[in-house]
Amino acid sequence: MNASVNNPETTVYVGNIDPTVTKEDLYELFVQVSPVAGIRYPKDKVLQVHQGFAFVEFYTSEDCQYVIQLMNNCVQLYERTLKVRRANAQQSGDAASIDLKIQPVAKIFVKDLDTSIDELHISKLFSKFGPLAGAPEIFYLTHGQVRCAYVYFKSYEHADNAIATLNGQLVVNKKLTIDYAFKENGKGNAKYGEEVDRLLNKEARKHGLLKW
Figure (spheres, rainbow, N blue to C red):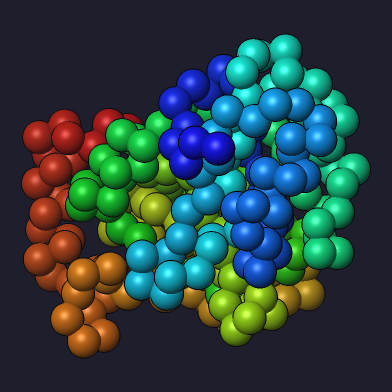
């Protein structure tokens, strides 16, 4: 079982995964449907917990499509219904993920999401305030009891507006807590949104490094 995923044409995105699920659990589940070429199951770099999604690669595009038809919204793992869809190049490519982490984008933290809200809903909700820099990342805290997400904006102005508007608001009967995320390699409790972050973001957009 390869730990990397290389081809988005033969890869599915799996969402709404219970954080106690292991990579071996995912392998045992999906190999029953089709031979598995590899699995990538990201962890939060700071918290070292799985983020609630994975990428499973198969050997053919036909196998990939068959798995989606058979398993999307039809299979439960640890009492959670899995969301299974075809991955896109931005989601599944390691290079794209790494690029997003090193770019000076505005990263915000969203806490207390309802389980019915997936990445697509989050994108629609937050993109009303401005362009996003990448796909949202859903994960869980407090032993899987608190559903959270990271959202990446291309502009701090748009992120500021989203935080000011949505923090404390009810979304599907859940009161959201929204703020800038803690920095992965920051000292103490350093968060995104500091003056230097905003300056770097402004310069990156000025020179066309962040495409709109």
